Image 1 (cartoon, rainbow, N blue to C red):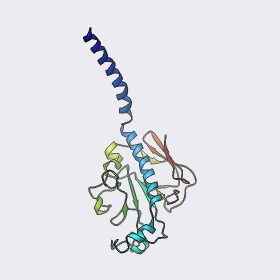
Image 2: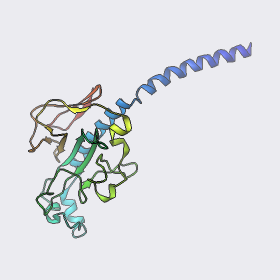
Image 3: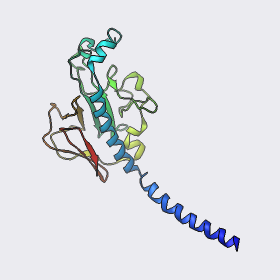
Amino acid sequence: MRILECVFVLYLFSILSLSVYIPFELIKTDDTRSALTTLYALKRARIMAIIDSSYIGHLDFKDEYSFRRVDRQRLLNEYALFYWQLQFHTTGIYTKNSLSIYRDTPRFANTTDFDRRPLAGDIVALSLANSQCLSGYNNTNIPQFCKNNALFDFRLGESNSLNILRLLTTSCNERDTFRFYFSDDSSVLCGNPIHKPNNVQVIQIAKFHIFLNPSTGYAFIR
């Protein structure tokens, strides 16, 4: 009798375990991870812009920031407003469907002054977990610290086999990419030339959609 009771208990336990396991697996699908990573990237870029302060850098760095191609005086100008940006890479062999969060820096050369690429000397956001760079760029267009040290999860095409990453029709689209600039008051700019969009921006990640309010920087997924 006890054997039958044990078998019955094990049977019930297996049914209950299966009922928990299936939903847990569903939320771990690649497309879901890609959508959640993108939502995190939007919120992280917004927070970076809100807490960033050129005034603090002006006080703390002084002459210590000495990357020779960067215009240090402009970078540490306490009144300058340099935007943190989230760039979406939608083409390329190694970088297709990937993300980068960085703050462009002023340069002495006109060709690289706020050139919209995270080159050496630019400030790239880091993962809070392991200090890896939150960038989908390859090793050619990336700061030295980030070479072979970029977070794999931000390469949605490689890590999750994501096939669809696009911004629905809007003035923010650029050639082979799109990006959002976040200011310290939480508002959002985009495009080339940079401007403030008139309506909510919709990013499609596979079957998911993320909505971004350009006035507040608030983003949510549906």
